[in-house]
Length: 270
Image 1 (cartoon, rainbow, N blue to C red):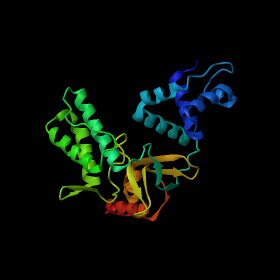
Image 2 (tube, rainbow, N blue to C red; image 1 turned 45 degrees about the horizontal axis):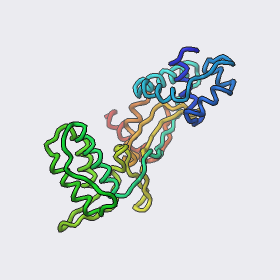
Image 3 (cartoon, one colour; image 1 turned 180 degrees about the vertical axis):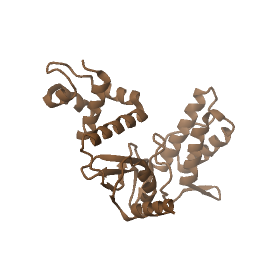
Image 4 (tube, helix red, strand yellow; image 1 turned 120 degrees about the vertical axis):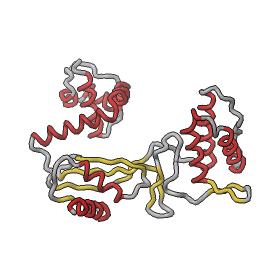
């Protein structure tokens, strides 16, 4: 087999370009002659198992992926294919891989993470949740759990997440718990606490991330920023501009982004 790390990274590039699943990458590497050539496989050579892709992806890590992609971009520029004088920027929503659940279920899930960590650290769990309990009962038990664990440092992160969920989702008045109106910055799921609600209006909300790339006219990405969906578009402007590795003469994008960059540049010049 050819150089395994190089082949796996090239397989990742193909996967991204064609939006293939790990299984589909394996199938293409098995039967597609062009893919075999790109991956430096012999015609009769068996490719990697599809599970190897996810293992390689995790082992290579975020920072090394970024370094390799920057290196590829530099090679494209040196070959004369990177037309960076005119660049575009915009933001778009990226669906979060989470299941949106009810407020009661979300609080129970957060409590479950706290109690699981307590057990792992050798503490006795004094709060037990039953199936199909009312929101009032669930909230009362959640506050008891917070009170009983306020001095347990080993679970601080998960405890703070539960506390944040209760503050953002629940309003308690005269001892009665009721749900608050939806707010964009609150946690959507305990399995991925970075996902947030994005919104175009009070009635149109979604649980996602937001990504803001800059790209050349021939669609090579020169910078990218990913945030929770609740971050305003104009907040992408300065970080994206500072990421740019190659000078540009014209930047095309939405008005809020461009105005923010203009003000930033004007401040620097002064």
